[in-house]
Image 1 (cartoon, helix red, strand yellow):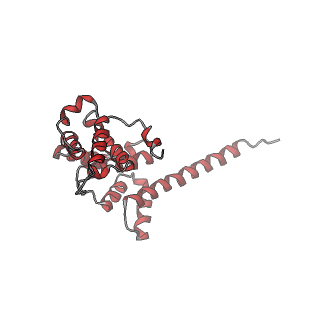
Image 2 (image 1 turned 135 degrees about the vertical axis):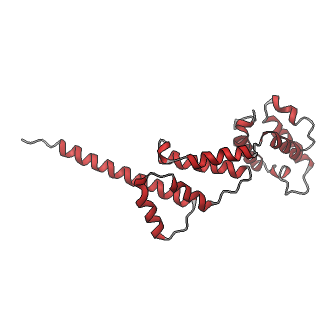
Image 3 (image 1 turned 120 degrees about the vertical axis):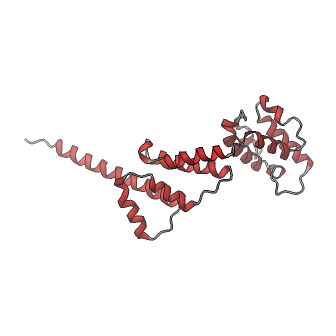
Length: 202
């Protein structure tokens, strides 16, 4: 009964390269929940045959039939997973260069909000790490700062003078806090002006 909530989830089927990364993350989480990930994990030396059949079946049923051609001869869950990885995981140099270019060219001015900006940076970095490209966390935090417009210079100077070690999480949190403070200040100023404008002189 404990698994019923997870079993009722409508997991997206693997259609191709465009949804492979999200599919991989969701199915890995699902298999972990079902205590079946060890059937796929290369670190596991011995796999329970019954669990392996179950894991293999679950993975195959979460693949679009058009992709069965890549896995129909696989004997184990690990083979199914590996075959799909070989076909759909785009980890070539052109993919790395494209993602790195996106990462470097993303700035706060090119995004609708600070939240969208940091989420975009973190998502691209996650994609790079998924294809075995090392993204240093201090470098990533500094890159987030590098994409800010000139009026954020006091924020950068404040972080520098604090002596705190730069990390992507710290910079992300600090930036979003800064935006909230700024928005609150604008809201307060506008309300003050409106209150002043609404004074009725008798």
